[in-house]
Length: 405
Image (tube, rainbow, N blue to C red; front, side):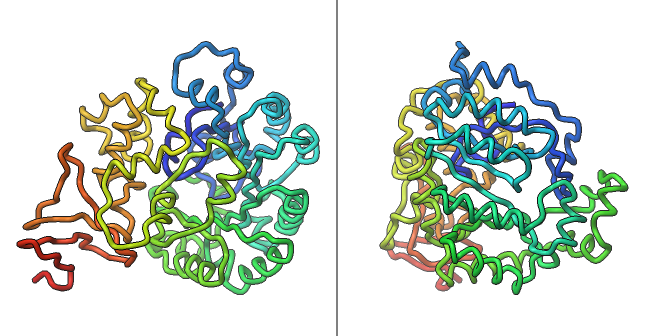
């Protein structure tokens, strides 16, 4: 199906996502399949949108007709056996459209056919997931997917053919990708100019495990299952910081660092959306940051979003935090500016600037300072601040957390 990318708003450069049938790669950690193992795509609806035949006034048609890029895909692999025929049918249409394409894949069948269809279309980015470089682990955890060596070769071939290529260590799990293996992978890919990496942690809870089929449980060793449920991300964080120090273009969403990761992505995908790093990268001196600046940066190049009004806008909140969405006022918003206002003011939204350690809420007497419209005011000084993240102003004097008794 094709839909607005509600759950990745202000995280992913594409505001539209197309996902096909349930993925036949059968990766043991894939929660898209765990939650819906029998998913089937509504190809007719997809074709109606991408051919321009839809007369809908809804958000999806608005985004598509304004040329925004499409993620293919977040919930299944476009090049797995269960999806390739539909993928090629969709690409034959998209090849003639101005919308860019952001492929998320482990590789599979039909990629050469896809590249032939897209020949001459340069607004294409490939995000290739590599969770391990060891065939035995991959065969067990990703039984239907190409082996790591095939994915590495695919990444190199795509880069040599002029495409922007991102390597996704997703999930990043030490038993599958120890540091020595990751360094070997980095050096191998640097030889052909691949330096973009995305990291995401492995997210498994005992509640999730209760829903696993016996086969899915058997894909994990006992030690892996135990380690996967530990509430720690130190290995994940260390590898992100190590790569950044190495000079690679690395991103893990929420990290408190400037990054050049998105520069080439935005260049490759016109009308891709900005995110918090678009703001962070432009902050060079200690100062206040206000909602108006945040709004203008988030919508730079996509100012037409301000003209849209629709019932679907609260779905962005629902898909990121149901508790925030339950507020009746939030369910009544209809405009993108109102949506950004929620992200700015409510730290329950994962993509809120308040959740990044580079920002602090300015307070006076312990109370947040707000502007004339009731929006909080943030402070940025380039330093990483752990909780509590407030910047207190007392009797006209700026006081740091360390000075507050």
